[in-house]
Length: 359
Ligand code: DAS
Image 1 (cartoon, helix red, strand yellow):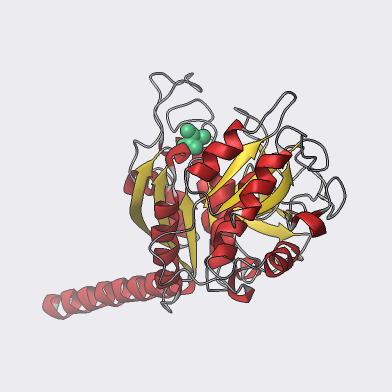
Image 2 (cartoon, helix red, strand yellow):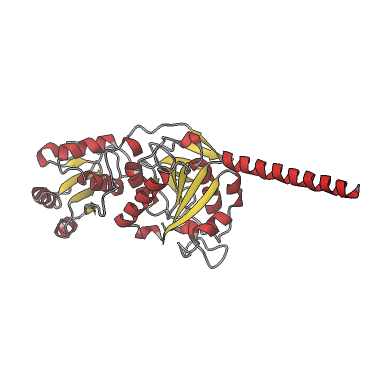
């Protein structure tokens, strides 16, 4: 009798455990699969004390530690992590971008990957985001995230930013939106966002063109759509590229001459973005060097240091006559990215101008 009771109790226990395991598996199966690609930055940074918010060391904490620091993530996604680089993002280079973009495209081609989060330093985060916006060949979400305070700081913003980014990357609402930046409870489109403050947590802004949504309680709320082409709609393919054409930026200011332009051309620039004053104006002492560079076959793009607004074609310079391109509203650093990719396809300035009005 006793034997039968113990058999029944044991089988009931096993039945209960089986149900628990099945329920857990069902729950996991429902959650999106999100891969975190870690590259370094402040989000992986550590400071000497909890009040160290400047003068800390970026790029010291590994991806597994970042994931373990936010256990809440496991309730919203099945998260895996890869440490792609471990660098402060001021050191990001073209070769890093090509390696990262190729890895993103391989992962997003896998049916068991629903979205990707890239943890990144904030200094060049906007540039990596825009580059990926032009070369990722998937509609699945790719979300870049960083932090302005190191992981060791009071009110570190990294953990909540990472939690939000994972939610966003796993959200069907983020599909087809292009590469996104999730910082400070805000969602930005890669093309128009820029780091606008050296140290504060609300640094990522798109001053006039605006953010495209919020993340609240882990849920994304979108209010705007981007109008320029991105990801699967672009004509750029980096899958067979091992390098990108050398494109540099020359910054304009009162009293500027031609030294920087001439030096960049002499160093082999195939394209040159001029960060002009105002509406992309060309200082008289710089213009002849740009004209000479164009005559050597260097493609010249007129951008502006101002930060907002359109650089008008044939406005402050006769672009038709000079055979220059205008950057539309792209910042100098993002105009450099589009010009690099354009030069992988063509050196025809009419074609390149079309690209600047398309992406
Ligand atoms: N040096 C900065 C960078 O890696 C730190 C940061 O803000 O992430 O971009």
